[in-house]
Amino acid sequence: MDQFTRLPKWGQFVVVLLVCALIVGAAWYGFLSGQRDSMQSRLRQVDELDAKIRQGREAQKRVDELNRQIDLIRRDLEVLKSIIPTDPETGQLLRVFQTFAREQNLDIYRISPQPIQKKDLYSEQAYGMQVGGGYHDLAMFFDKIAHMRRIVNITNLAMSASSKPGETISAQFNSLVYMQNPEAFSALEKKP
Image (tube, rainbow, N blue to C red; front, side, top):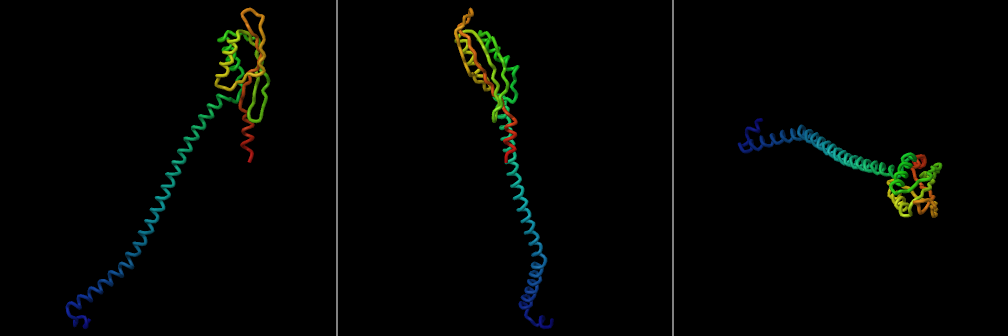
């Protein structure tokens, strides 16, 4: 300490300044560097959490988009079920055929549903029909059947001149109606 007092004032000032700098440096290194490391680790955690939040938001957007697609597919499936239903709906079809025939002034002599024939992915059922009336009336009847929402084909058409009063032709044909075969689809889903 005696040597310190012998130093000129500016020298004492420099020594005090150096000691203060050492104290501040030691405090900075010991105390504040630990705080800085803690702060940097917390900033890294914040960045990681932000990245997870972004991933979660992107995943939520994908989930929302997939849910929209599922809803569209379900609506499409309902439309397809009306075109190719799973049930034959025989009673409803017979009423539709009778209504179409009545609207076209056709006489129905016979409608006979045939057994359902199962195919690979669908089933079909024929309705043997015999009608009588005008040629153009029969064509309009077929046109109405062609514009039904569900798929119906006319097969085995045989027409002949009619001897009955008020009729020009007599026609025999099959109305072939298609249905889904749910067992086939479930079997396909089970295949690896």
